[in-house]
Length: 484
Image 1 (tube, one colour):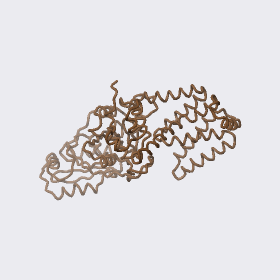
Image 2: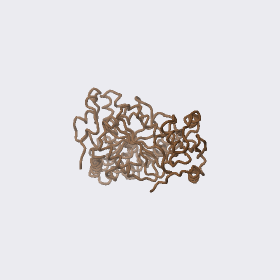
Image 3: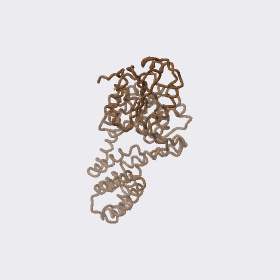
Image 4: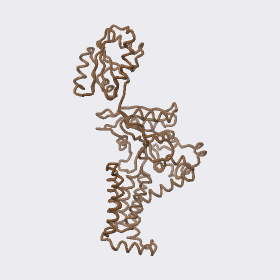
């Protein structure tokens, strides 16, 4: 689409801007005289500060002698010779002018000149930096990203002070012109990875961009694969650690969550506390997280399969109690497990979406009352409720794979309840196929777990001591990248 050049007439430019923004209450204009040239200051109050503009610009201009007779000469004087902190590149088109205004800058229009000057007077309302709410860690930084893009870049820059840190700010193809930043370490990140991500993001067109997760489906190689192509964090410290590994961090204006590319399966079982604790304890906790993930996915389905199709595998004392409990319930075991699992998810969702003042009450009291009532009424058995609750709690041990755990759990219960052991094996093969079939940007999703090697014992299934990690640190560009 062709750009509209600015007019030499100051009044025509102001009339054009008034026709675009005149109905907006926060649009502010002020006509001033600089030397012999009529000028005008335009800005949006609320995201640009008139007080800051007066201190930075107008006082400096009124206290200095302006050696310019017309608009073009005044423009050159302000850029080259004055102490006014204007942008070095003048504004040439109406579209560029509107973009600068909506970014919180003030714009100086000059009569008799087809160019304008932008002045950085941003003063956008923002939330104070607060502790993270969804990533609980006992040690390390307690800062979280905010909704302001440049603040988030500054938080990364403060922790990652290498000169190779690069933050490319781009404008997404959305009507709102939302900005996003591509952050990486130019010395550690593979150039092919950066170029691939940059090219894919530049081609994405969205009606609205409110979070970095909006990019996820465009970056996945297999759209039907349930495993994520990216990881997410609200901690600058975690993002900084991924930058050291040669990964790319995507920040979106208005979102306090960063996207990390590429993402591997083993990283969902890691946390900052793993590297602050002793290696033995951190390794034990990481193994417990793997056990919790498989329990949350296969636990209810394995119970259904064992009770219905393979009771001989259960000790006789336990089998007797299970048979007594199931004999008092009217529903088939498969429907019983599906129903109670669905009910627990409804209670969790209600507690999550309810106001914070009553959210914990809804989730805790709802689960206790509904569960106890269902057991007392004989609708579900105590063993089924216990297994479903254990799987739900185990899911919380790996929160970044919560969605995948829930979906696979329903699949496993359904297949195991209908087909027994073959159904359970089929669901396990589907899970394995999806993990092996995911290749984020040409890298193995199961690296460093499969194929097993030294890296799996350095920082995969368990964590090595820091003296070993310091000598054999992992970087994604050193991973074997597929060319096919």
